[in-house]
Image 1 (cartoon, helix red, strand yellow):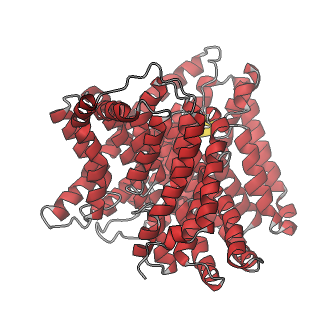
Image 2 (image 1 turned 90 degrees about the vertical axis):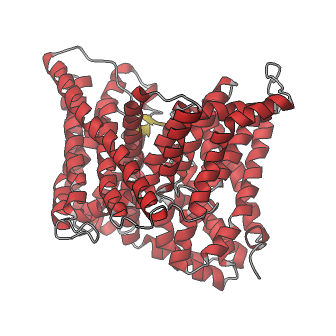
Image 3 (image 1 turned 180 degrees about the vertical axis):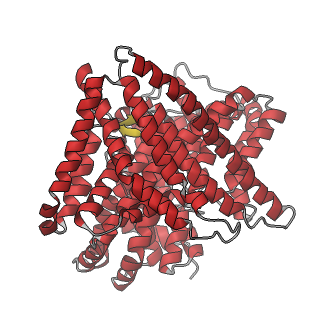
Length: 626
């Protein structure tokens, strides 16, 4: 079972319509890609200008965040369009990749048809939502919010166009007819079965959020569209909720300004590689730990611990690390599947390292001291990191190091001097956040400017011809990730409206076993929740309900926060459902099929570390002020 970009099937027999569709796709696709790439560049300029104006000239640009937010939604939607056109929306390929060519072609066409079904269904609500937002005036720029909200219907319309073109380019007329008919029949059957859903009550959650999602995912429908179809079906067929509300929840998920760090850190990771900073850093790290079995895996764990929390997004953290370490690790014989498994595990391990946006969210919705949460998060992350290191030691205990050079102290020193500008980058980024120079969203632009200057002035390696492809890749990957987040946010809202969160809290408060019984149930519940909810929505939904219960049964709120965050992190990064695992695979550009057999050892280590953190409150509270 795996998730991967949609793979182009073998080209069907050429016909005049497919040739014409390819020509239209090429021209229109170039236009959309250029606009999406320009938006990435504009975001960097706007946010960095805000930093300079505020910190250097002491004249804040009050409109910079608002303008960045408007452009971000457009970037997310146009990036999703680019991803659909290029076949880079993430999906499970376990079945699709192991069937006959004829069946595979049908499943490929069916995946596009199912995606088109959702896009067609949501088209009118998307336009309706943009129209309603037109009555809202933005506070800083004082323009209609329709300028921002229009990104959703425009993006949906463009995805319909490019989805249809993709069908024409890669499918025969027979395949197109069969798959479109199948999609229409399924939608019609669910619509006609609407009276049957009312008596099911809460069982509808199983039907839509388990069965429908699973069937779509295993059939090869992209993850985002699988979530979206299930949520749309649940809300339309079992509730009286207007579908414009679902569009609003998708907007909410894709518009969270902290998530703007995702595309900017993805681009930063590409810059680090292109400017030679990555090569310099790897040379130094390899000289320092290259002669140790599993040495670069230890470096990966430590690097994630070092930079985690800077961006407020685990995906962005991984995007800053993977391009730097993975190429050299692969050269040394590391399996790509093992690398992406370890990267995913470190995403869960470092969830509590400040300045974590999840910690800030917990403090804001529960009243727990954010300073105490920041203090309490460091040691628990170290405990889980040591557990991961034990797995690395075991797996690489027999690694053949006969061909690995052992460097002298002089050589290590020379490599360190060369790599020093690259090594300083994480410290520059973290210092900018801690000292208040930039917010967690803006700080990535400082890294971008730093990397550009280092490439031009220090490493003298900067290929201007690669900038546009890098920007397009950034937009495509960001769009795929943000569309998943938007659809997952809508699903989370649907679960909340069903009363699921209240029922869960009532059940957990009545569990036997006192504090440790409550912690055990919380771990199980939040691992499951982490599979389908981003950390922030889950905390906003369940934090106010469960933290008072934790205090009543004798659990320190900081201790409970660490347990909850790690449990959600394990769920978020554990396949086959955890969205974070798919994000790690996308960032690392590794087919998750390769990571499945490796990740379970790391997940077991994380569970052991979580049990230790839950059983020993001192790890979380030992350094708090008395």
